[in-house]
Image (cartoon, rainbow, N blue to C red; front, side, top):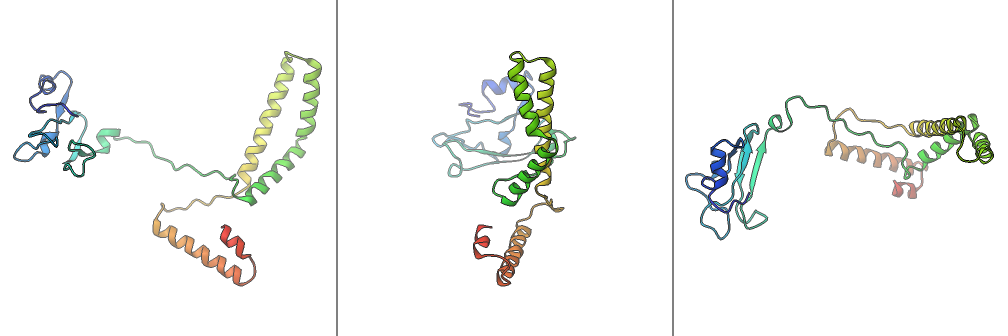
Length: 211
């Protein structure tokens, strides 16, 4: 931070030395034998870095003026994950992609087919028409039994859509982590397979361009 003065002799550093806030100055550790100027038009350090005693800084580097974004020299810090986030971290889970994607035409067709089949099995349209007639007959406010019927039908329609999305496409999650090299060879293999299918007359040239 810009303290407009020597970071080891200003009022902020004095209060730190008195132990009022539990902070310590660490930027001076990368000065070397002599204090470095931290402003382009200055003759000495006027920027300081302050941290709590719990934070563990493994490495620190001060950039020159050319590589810094402003007229002050920037600091690069290497902070340990143990001191920043703690020792007992939760496992980061990779989010699973959606099975229903509009660009996947076959998945969309399969989704619509499953939804229509299960709506027919559970007579969704007939029950919607019946509820519509009963709401018009009972008026507002609707009785409790009719509200429960509406919510039950709505929940069942949601379950039908979720089931259809679950069954419309299979997602094969790789065992290994993402690798640019593996991804390159994976795409190359599928390009060769598509060329073979084109040579055998099993696909059209436009389908290769679209994929």
